Image 1 (cartoon, rainbow, N blue to C red):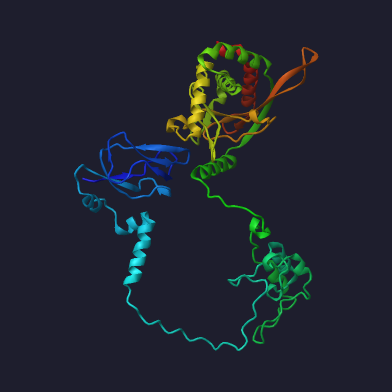
Image 2 (cartoon, rainbow, N blue to C red):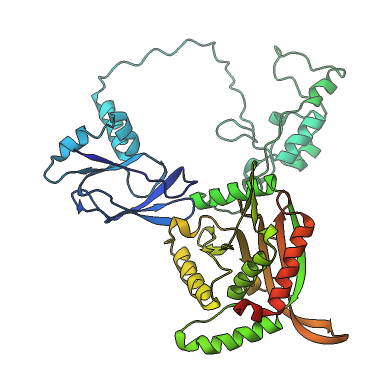
Length: 454
């Protein structure tokens, strides 16, 4: 009995994906656990494993195909010794579905049908009104398809002044009508094009026509002949755009910034790295800030929450989702239970997660969930920035660079390494005083880092 291999849902938000690469070919034998394909989801490129054994009877969807719906048949597995033709008959697909899944098959079918059509005499052309001896003159500003080539500004000016664009010769690139052509046009009314045309509108009718002008097309780079390329949006980029737009539109953000002295943190990092060198572990400032955020969430638990329409979700551990830049987008692998993990463990896990994220090898549970987020741009020298909340989290930290500057310490001016940290909070779940209490706990944790080792 043939088995339909369907496009899997590899994440809760996945509705369609790209079949990036087949790792098998027709006729290959496969067993449960064998890798079949690489599928690009809205988050990452993931490997798809077989759960049945048999022979790949037919590959329905070619590799590189975009927008394959979840549940669509992508291949057919036949039992050992089963005739491949039988598997195709039993696949449950209609001929139309198979042609749609395989563009080359559809094209071949169309050519075949075209070749089978008997030759017929062409139908007589419909009778039309006799054409005048003098054809209508070609408009200088018109494209080959008859559309007038005009800049958006020139179109608006022409509508306001009542200038007929068909009477103008464009002086812009490619014969485009531009503002200078409108300014140089004489008269302010649309000329009559033929004797049979209606008379020019009266002055009383002009305001009514002017009140509802035709909408001007939005300006694009092509309107100004700017060299450019158009890159197709990936599924990941579409998801990022959709989720962050929803976040900005639906979540009432407020932000709290605080300056933190990180000299003690940097000193502790140096001492710990010396002791961890033999184990091949090196702590980054980011690793320590992950730990600091997690500890602060335990000290100020009212910020470790998520808002829903019916409930306030209060978390009893701190799972920190860390923003990682990857080719084509952004992903947030999660350090679970960061509040109770050793710094060496956080550093080891974060290095592994970041490497696999960039390779597109994260598993779904490694980037789905979390209780709060962290974004660090300090390595780029950024001194301060705001981050957008990643739903369903109630907050995100924006970590900037440590900058040496003069500060007042114990009533004297001293040089210290200061870092500006900005928290973005969901005001539906976290009130201003609550967010400020968390930022205070974070500052105390970072400026007294030995407490993170207890």
